[in-house]
Amino acid sequence: SSITSASNLVKYLTRFTDEIFSTLISFIFVVEAVQNIGRSFTNPASTFTKGLMTLIVAVSTYVTANTLRGLRNTVYFTEGVRKNISNFGPTIGVLAGVLIANWAKVSQGAAATLPSLAIPPTFATTSGRPWLIPIMDLPVWARWGAFLPALMATVLLFLDQNITVRLVNNPQYKMEKGRRKNNMLDGMHADLLVISILTFITSIIGLPWLVAATVRSISHVRALSIFDSAGKLKSTIEQRITGLSIHSLIGACVLFDKPRAILTQIPKSVLMGLFLFLGTSALPGNEMWERMKELFKDSKIAPKERWSKVPTKVTMLFTAIQMGCLGAMVYVKESPIGVLFPVVIAMLAPLRFWLEKSGVVKKEYMDILDEE
Image (cartoon, rainbow, N blue to C red; front, side, top):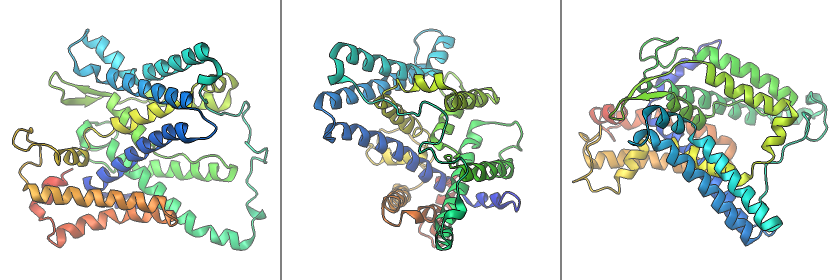
């Protein structure tokens, strides 16, 4: 698709699709964290003490990260101090969670010791298999049977990559380097070519695929955003240092023993708190989320939003349709036909244009609600 410029199909995706997909990823992060915390209470191998400590550590990590992340919008300390503490809020939250877990372990012993990350001590295949996947050992029927799942995985990777790029390259972040003004397609073909090559390599040696990491990508670009005194975004720092540093550290954790040994000291409950933070921190600025909250607000005293010119009934209908799409995606993802999940995502764009063409949402209102 990178060679045939299939990424140009992304121009048919709009804010309607972006918002639903972004909300879905945030939902998955939050639900995964909540379910993991809940299992610490219901798992027969766990105890109430461990469940309670899991909850305390996860909530402490989340609250610390969220509070410090919001420090940039307060009047405390100097601007430089606020900015630096805010940027490292999630890191400080992780450290706080680890310290609380270690304090409980030291003071209460095994009764309060929480499970930590399970990471192989050496860089090798988990089962001891050869690095190269013996594809030809599969019977012929199995190779052909993998066609449909492979096709769905291709569609999912294509949509995940390009929707995430659209979200990150949104004109609201005012990035200019390497792209034309207000253009969100520049660079997509090259990105997809790199992703396809890496996916091919990781597939034949059995490593996890590299994906766009929607929530983390949005959090990254927001961490590089510069705001004025009124809290409005002025610009974004465009550089490669943070991306290179982050992935160099990830590579070090994969290849070297000492970084892996450090990670094994981090309780899983700390990561659940971090998941909660990442899931919820990606929601502000998502207009679908803002309209969902608006359903519970008193319209007489609530601040006017960009879509306030649209009749309330139309706004509620548009939001309800998005929520229905979100529910359908979650249902299909968790159902026995979960392999068809990418098809549901792909159908969002045609649905949006059908809503306009059929008159369910008039074009004049759709132009406001779905404005790029």
